[in-house]
Length: 395
Ligand code: ASP
Image 1 (tube, helix red, strand yellow):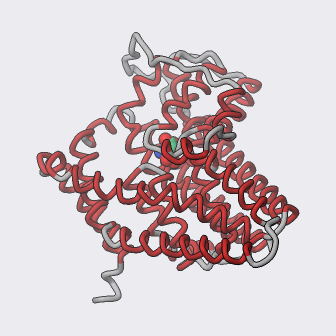
Image 2: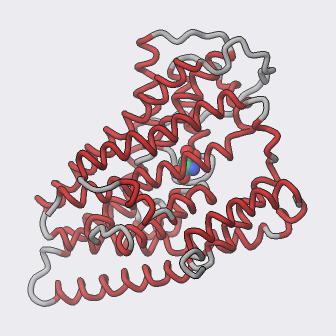
């Protein structure tokens, strides 16, 4: 019995319980919202110090610029190729199933406000002017950038000072992982409250009219998570991907419940090292970066959503336009923040790149939260798979 009552199984039970409670006792959702919010706050509280110490310690562990570059290049290759593959699956599937063709769904008159993203925005989202501001505002990419440079500079410090700094930060990093372990104990309770609130406030009824679209996204996500990524793991990582997924499943389950890769990051770091056997140097660098820029699930969803909305408007996308969708969906997933609903905002970028009316977003927004939960779980699984594979290729 005790073996069955693991944290992972309890989390899964809480998700199911949360859905049922949200459907049958919707008043409960609002009442226990605070429990979910406190749980989320506890996770978010750990993100900034954990990213800083992990990336810093990982950079010190790599020991020199060459090794760091090696890890960086391998991480980029894995992230870009898996994201590309996920967009490709999305495009193939959506072309095959053609959801929304000839549909009678009523199209909204006005769309969301669009903020154009520029190259400068991209630069300033990475390079900080004041690291303390990056810390207080939680800009993960800026924190990573600063921590890597600070780590590389620290490696040039002479004498035993370097060892003292290393000991101090390794200790702090360990303490933060322990803190994560405590918060993780609350997962079943937090997850129940979060899921119950979402289901009770959105309602499962919205899935009815948009089932074709939702089904296409879900199928695509399942194919990517259970076929494509495992094949890559098997051939390049040389391990059993399903056994690995089983051992680290707490992280994707939490990602599903919170719809936030960032909030899941402390748990991803903990399970990767303690249950998945990924070394600290690798997890400390690959996972924070992955949570921010590697979003396979989001990329796939963007590609399906844009073709679905085009179908609603009776717009046939040409092959070159599909190529533009391929590129912009990949870019949009890199640029999406690791928080709930970020993918929906980035969809404006993909839609406008091929001239599909942005108003279409008004249609899919109703089911977005549910799809967000699933795509975030796939995003986090993609990061964890990457950490395990890259760990094999760096020494
Ligand atoms: N919620 C997703 C994440 O945190 C991003 C998205 O909205 O697609 O990974």
